[in-house]
Image (cartoon, rainbow, N blue to C red):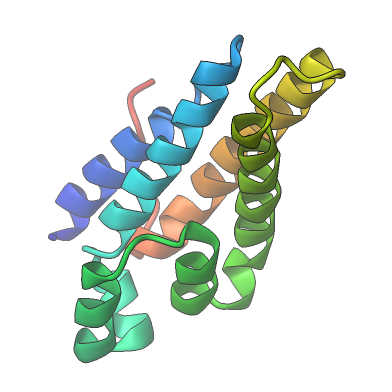
Amino acid sequence: MENKAEHDTLTQAIQELSLPCETIEEAIAVSLKLDALVSSLLKTSFAERRVGAERLQRLSMEPVDAPQVLREIGGEPFEYVAQLADELLEILQASVLDSEVPEGYDDMLDDADALRKALYEAFQDLLPSIVGQKIECKS
């Protein structure tokens, strides 16, 4: 991807994380949005510079493990985002495995939404380093 195209694609994927989760289904959809964002990240020149073309090709063919890919591609600057992703996926996995509405459903949803918001903000902060320069967004 070219720098502007990378910026636009990643900005769109990051924007998908901007909507609050009001139901557990919306929270679960955040994991799909995160996978899409990581897939977009794998197509950037940033990712290729960080891990090399050969490793990037292998990562692109494997099932997406968002936290692991974020750690591998981004290193220490991405550790916070990877940790948030780990925590969110843990909450969502617990909600999927519990076939009944769990006690503390509202707390779980609030936690998932807080993590979604933190991911959104953290990715916005990382965007300039990923695309190599700050490009003003229309929002």
